[in-house]
Amino acid sequence: MKKFQFLMDYRVNILKALADPARLQIIDFLKDGEKCVCEIIPMLGKAQSTTSKHLDILYDAGILDRRFEGKKTLYRIKDYRVFKLIRILDDLILRQLQPIVKTVEALKTS
Picture: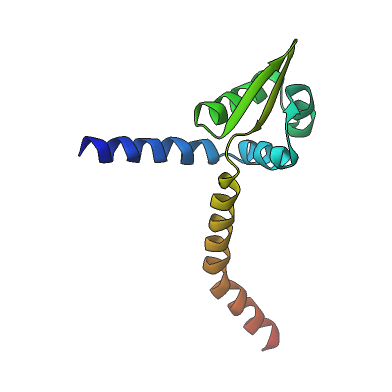
């Protein structure tokens, strides 16, 4: 039971890290490669401290990796399978929205 609980806790930790629009923006921004915090801050449009907190959460969850180059901190996606997880979630959302779309289309034609 403890092994199962550990796995559940780890899943929850990853899902919590993904459960924020700003963090999803960061992940999307990093899909093309490593970026400096100095590039992430203006893209996100949030304070440096807020951006750093989001980056730390993603790093602690094992989603991002970071390295230091002089005074710069550079972040990158640690495991690109995170994008597969996001695509699966997008597919789930689209399936859930299908009945709504069909209803709206039916209302338009009636």
